[in-house]
Image (cartoon, rainbow, N blue to C red; front, side, top):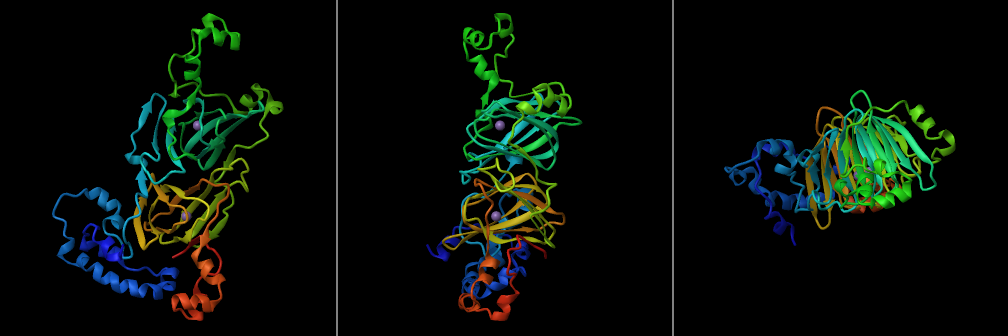
Length: 423
Ligand code: MN
Ligand code: MN
């Protein structure tokens, strides 16, 4: 399919939004300028209609949605074709509200491209539990607000109990039974990430349901409980439910047997308060994977803070697709895919982004506040390849042949991977 064929399927755009289309002064934009010349000439013909009455839109429109997504409404002229859905928002997902909190999810059902990872956003009020459960997927979680107590049992019978606060994360392996309880003063809210795109928060193994589906005489034989005690067991799922606040962490740990039954594995990690993996004038990146958090063998994560105007540099990930959660700010991302396709979308707090495996992309802070987001990968290690680093690690003659740049111009490109680049 030619560029022209693809473009004819694209919707008209609002000429008043042309200001979003100008090329920025990104280092790499300059570097690929030579390659882009031929394309730009084609572009100016293809997109001729954008500047005149062709782009008028007299029919209905969702003004609020258009305002949130200027780059989707009127794509940069560098966009071509379609790459499938790369955006969804937890604020569109149906909330399941129970006494004690709520949950909603963005899975492969909501964002069909994301086959490797699903996300759940959950709130527990102070004292309330996410019921004792387990599931087929590994679970990685990031605390967005408040405080919680988590527990997880190892197959060897040792138990891990810890408290987590905003900016902390946990990892629970598939099949390991665990619990989450909101603590004071106002419970918690967190993001759960699972290494199965089709995961459903409504499809976990609940202790209440298992006991409800086991004959009383078997429960009696298994537990030693008498009929009066068994009659008290819940007859349906608890899932999310209110309860009393627990005692101190030290008291809970001591009550269950202290150090002799304590897990040797550490299942929580203080991500936000760790020393940044990378700091620059553009912001900070914190990476947590199996190198510094050994239990997290299937999820690698980056927490990125981008200052206004800064970009997460042009890069790709050789080992996985990327699932993003936006915590704060406003940004845009363009994803490049073969052949000749590129799609730009805007992202706001509580949105989810998706990047197909090995697809080139950048993320730019387009707002006035810090843009904060999580990059998540179904992988044991965080890996990315920087376009800048690639171009600078090659002999200059090779790069010149591909870009028409002089050796002096090539040397302006940062030689080492920056991750984030200030404006
Ligand atoms: Mn779970
Ligand atoms: Mn990335």
